[in-house]
Image 1 (cartoon, helix red, strand yellow):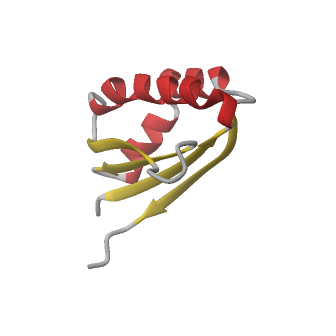
Image 2: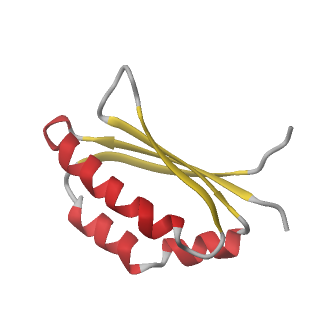
Image 3: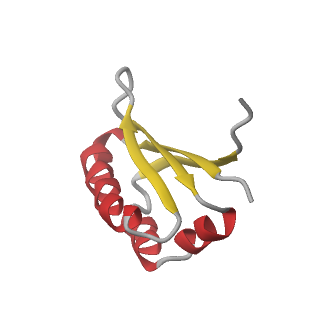
Length: 96
């Protein structure tokens, strides 16, 4: 079983940027403590402060899927409803 890399791209509505950022930051300590989480790093674009990117690595796809079903993620989605313009998740594998 190979490690799974996740790149999650979140674009906040400009007037909701700080709110979305605060909600994203809440996810970090909870997720880092989850079984199978190798790293869970949040980035904010230097040119477009409305753009956030999570770079994550998980021991397996199964453990990442457990994370995706956790209550704290559902709470984040509910809290930020209407505040996010785009939310794209890419599942990736290291090839080199």
